[in-house]
Image (tube, rainbow, N blue to C red):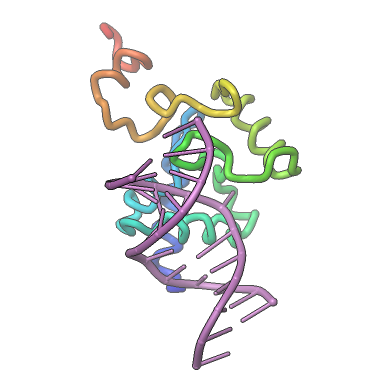
Length: 118
DNA sequence: CAAATGACGGGGT
DNA sequence: AACCCCGCCATTT
């Protein structure tokens, strides 16, 4: 694994705003590593804690946490996200609402209302 | 060295 | 929705 890709992945993960989530595939794309979702997972797995990456904001494309139900990791990630206001319904997050970056543009602006008039 | 595995994703049935 | 199959590739067995 080249270090260059890792840094790009770290940067992409860092760019996820608080209260929003992204997916492994999305992060791969943001890092210029199309189709390398698995590499993102591996990279997060081996990322040093002192980097303070918001790893918990990365979930899978189904809007679900990719750790086994009931595992310590799953619990931790769930708790961290809830703390940021991310809502789970039946164990999954509505990516149209909390997903980042938004692709729908209009829908995102309507739901999040970051500018003002919205 | 070959085969299996995995914090994944997308398309087809 | 559930399932299967393929692409992807670093690590592990």
